[in-house]
Image 1 (cartoon, protein in one colour):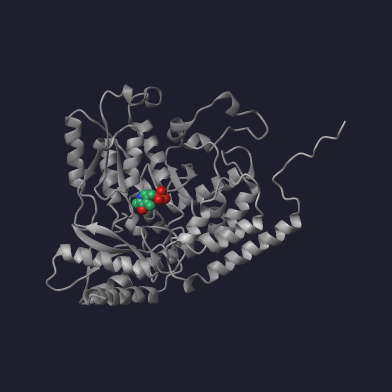
Image 2 (spheres, rainbow, N blue to C red):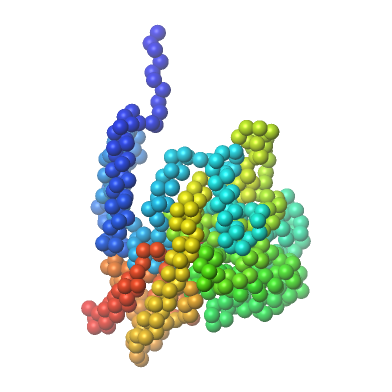
Length: 487
Ligand SMILES: *Cc1c(COP(=O)(O)O)cnc(C)c1O
């Protein structure tokens, strides 16, 4: 009888070879990060590189070194550019070299962070406790790292629904609802809140969007009136979503006033602080968030203004019991045991949607320890000062017009030409923006404010310097002049 063939494995036949290649990858990435400033922010992926991706299903192995060559040639040079010092599009974080290493360590451990008895659970619990303290949430609040702000909002709003529905929503779904549930937010609320409300079966029609004032903050008396109107019409209001840092202009609602309305009306108060909540780390800015510490829940990202690599967001909930009641399920194969790794059950799986989860907490824990929260707060304040600097450059420039207040890290402006109407200026500024993006000199994005096309600069970038913003203003002037001259 022949001896059985050796079993297969995905471990390398030659660890030494893999080690050498792995070290090269690491060195290449350090070079890539060190020299990011010298490259264009963005450039489109060339057709040839895209064509090389269109391979048939790879049924047989190719050497890792060859696959890595393709990555280095065809993928690595063509990112969106958000690690670049002059990237200010949407709200997208920069990442850090230290975070890259932390993600590597987490991937090496390959922790399945459902929350059983392993060290990662304790790292996550400790890190969440630090964040709760920094944001002014009470000791004993519960929390969860999730993929990002969108998931963090969904988790928090699910807890709100559980807390305030007034019927057994987990059993019956909204079929058991005696009245339509309604949720309130300003017209500036992020689209992820709408997604969450839709996914929960509440429906967009029951997400009541309240007008904002000239500072893009929710008009609180209008909120109170809408709640009263809806109650009179037979609806059951359950929650108000305040925003700390709107995506359009960086506005923060009057969170203390919203907390008061919620207290009076018996509603859940959730804060979407995707980027704004971390302002809590900067003492001089923290007053903007007054009232956040009264929220029932808060959602925020570490991959935006925490500067960490994707993905990591966080939900904190003031009421750990309701949080658990929203998600906990105990099939026999997940049941807690008296001893061993399953003792205590699956802590984090019982607080959110995911069962299997990555060890996102590791990079947060390492970042808070290695940078210190004071430095992160100083970087956040630095970004706000840079926004002010840019706003000043715009305000002092006769050919530039600011289109919204810039209370935080977002500046919206346009190039103006005397005598041109909004329609002409919209087309002109769109062209200016495209050219700036396509030449790779900088990467702002855009938004529409009151029918006007704004070049929008959102700064969550620890690599930007003041001169980068001066360079942007110069580029807008150069490109604007060129377009006007038909070049
Ligand atoms: C980015 C953002 C979100 C969504 O967060 P993701 O991490 O992209 O899922 C939600 N709300 C606001 C205000 C945001 O800026």
